[in-house]
Image (cartoon, rainbow, N blue to C red; front, top):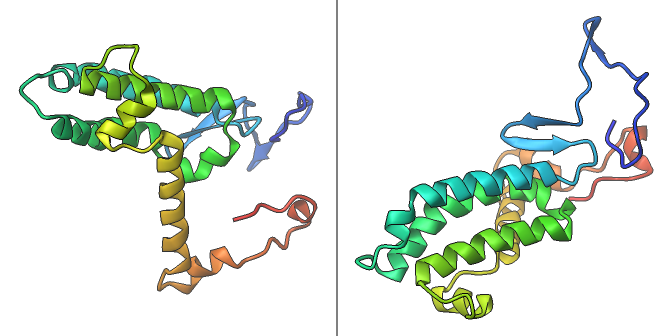
Length: 177
């Protein structure tokens, strides 16, 4: 059912003899999973939600009475987690345009926090606020999750990192951890 090719509409999945309505995407545990598994809808939704939160926090993020460190803390606590929720699941499948949306959200947030002109380089602003590019931050999150899985005291969790697919469905295209 997940494919870049068009899916035949004659396929009608059933659960307990009840037909399941076909959809090109669905939300599962807060992540929008789409037919092509490129998570573009998820990124768009997450960025729009984060922008909405950023807008409601505008009085704080633009306040001259707060330090840049405090404003960065607000960004890292309330805005960035919305954009990066479950990123260890979807980040490896993102297109360049989806990465651009995430970086743009971060850049505009940091520019507002640091009260910089549009002519100032985004890299310089990230450096002055001591915040990693969003891609690097997501890589850190992913590595943290991998480490937690590998070092889990529970065998059923730690074995996930060494388990190999046994189903015929995955032998041709295994999912790598």
